[in-house]
Image: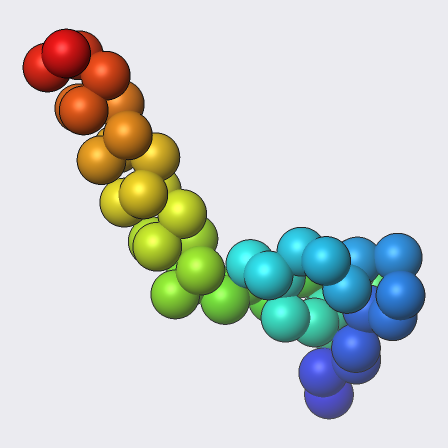
Length: 52
């Protein structure tokens, strides 16, 4: 079962929810798309700055 994170984490685009594992641990569910997009944008900016 996936649980929403609520207002506290609503601004974090890369975390889409949470679940409780069999041993009782809480696991965050990552949304890989925004992580890849963010990394790509940061890498593009880094390369532009080093070329200048």
